[in-house]
Amino acid sequence: MITVENLHKHFGGFHAVDGASLSVREGSITGLIGPNGAGKTTLFNVIAGVLPPTSGRVTMQGEDITGLPPHALFHKGLLRTFQIAHEFASMTCRENLMMVPGGQSGETLWNTWFGRKRIAEEERALRAKADEVLEFLTITHLADQRAGEISGGQKKLLELGRTMMVDARIVFLDEVGAGVNRTLLNTIAEAILNLNRERGYTFVVIEHDMDFIGRICDPVICMAEGRVLAEGTLDEIKANEQVIEAYLGTGLKNKDMVGT
Ligand SMILES: Nc1ncnc2c1ncn2[C@@H]1O[C@H](COP(=O)(O)OP(=O)(O)O)[C@@H](O)[C@H]1O
Ligand SMILES: [Mg+2]
Image (cartoon, rainbow, N blue to C red; front, side, top):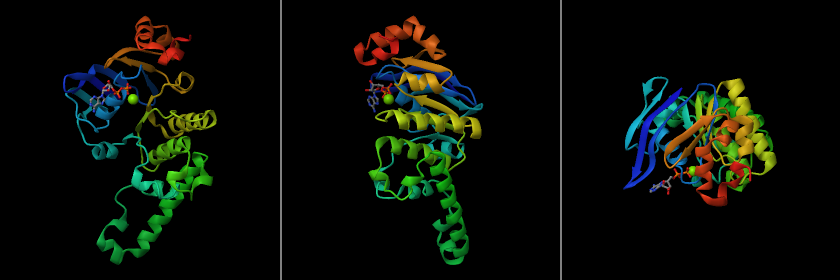
C-alpha cells in the first residue's frame, strides 16, 4: 500500500532518516520499532507530509505522494494521529470528534442563511457518528467531558477515534502506548485490531512496548540510525544480530527488547 524508497531527511548536517526503504502491505498492522533517535518519528512525519524529505520517494498504491501536504493525504485516507490540540482541550470529547470531517454545510454563509434544516440534519448525523465512535472505543462515559480533563490513555483513544470520523485507509500511530496503563493499552490494542478486521484499516504503529507490538503487529520493521535494519515477525526481529547490536548500543534504556 505504501512504499518508501531510499528516503533521506537531513536536519543541517544530521541525517535523521538516512536512506530508509520499506513497504507496508495493505491490510497489515505493521510495527515500527528501534532505539530512541532511530528516525521513526521523522520517517512518519515525512510520509504524512508534515516534513518535506531531503530526497527519496513515497508512493501510495503506486501513486507518487512524496511531499504532499497533510490535507491532501487526508483526502486519500492517509492519516497520522496528533495530540489533541491545545485549543480543543476545552471542548468535549464528542465535540472533538464532531470537528473532524471537513466540508460541512454549516461552514458557508449561503448555507447559514438558506440551509438551516440541512445543517441541523448533518449535525445530528455527525453527532450520531461521534457517539458510535465513542461506544466502539468504550469511552461513551467521556462524551461530555472536556478533552483537556481526561487521562493520557483516554486521550490516545480519542486521537484514534478522530481517524474513525473519516474514511481512513492507512493510519500512522506514534507511541500510542506511551504513559498508558495496561487496561487502556488493551482497549487500544482491541480497537486497532477491530478497525483492521472490520473496516480494513492498514496501520503502521511505532511503540516501545514489545508485548503490545507482539500482540498486534505483523510484520515488524526495525530501524536504527535512519535506516531499516530488519523486517520479520517480532520473534525473528528479536533474534536478529544487527537489531540486538543496535539496541545494546543505546545502553540499558531498551533492555526489554533483548530479553535481559
Ligand atoms: N527538527 C529537528 N531538528 C534537528 N534534529 C532533529 C529534528 N527532529 C528530529 N531530530 C533528530 O533526529 C533523530 C531522529 O529523531 P526521531 O525521528 O524523533 O527518532 P525516534 O522517533 O526514532 O526516536 C534524533 O537524533 C533527533 O534528535
Ligand atoms: Mg519518536
